[in-house]
Image (cartoon, rainbow, N blue to C red; front, side, top):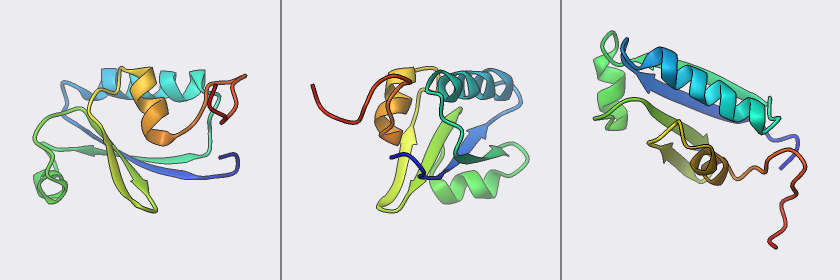
Length: 97
């Protein structure tokens, strides 16, 4: 998966934005992965965009993959982020054990 660029959208409210963004940056940093584009949407300021994606709870991370959007409902869960993005932590490879 090296060289692949990920497009991510993080849906937040003013109450959840700081912690959600911090958790996401921490997860991506721990994964030593920097090839991503992140858009953050405040659902209070842009409710129509949240509605278009069916967002009912925040924070919510959407990975816009070639085969469709994939959702991470718990941005504090490093394992869930890794699984959804299909990337390995630093020092791991993409092979199954």
